[in-house]
Length: 227
Image (cartoon, rainbow, N blue to C red; front, side, top):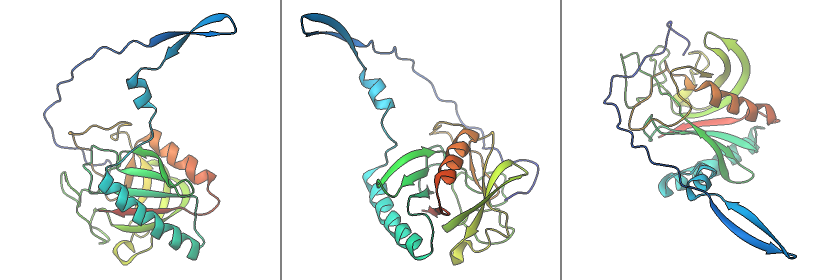
């Protein structure tokens, strides 16, 4: 929700102790082809893991499969995108990636990022509560249609239109997708994330990735916030 001069900041938490481990050296092997010998470099296991697509637990994967089928059917019936959808899993800790960009054609998550939940007008809220109240400052569960792009109080933003009774006031509340500098680009768990006033608040870098998907979609995309 676009209110106040700033988004709420998280409470102080104990700093993590970082253990620095040396990077594994790349393994080199020699291969012989047509009488010539050449050296090839094999990526280390750590480098291979960095290239893997975002994953979720088996339990969350099952839920995602159920939701994406519902979204696809809903999209067909309401002339919305059957290429992509956005999923926000509020059952996950705020320091974990819980905004998922989902490719409905490939049936897979293609990107994931951090997203804040609403403070419900409190100083700070570590775990989300939900309300559709016009001045609640809370996140609202349910399906949304991602609307038009505009530049608002927090810069580049996309309007959201609530599609369910539990989020019907989203447009009236000015609940939107926007970037903010208190949201980092990578997971911070077990630390917690800053709060919004109910908006779907992400990092600026992840916002650009969302905007790129929206730009590639021929029809409005469905965003579903669930727990």
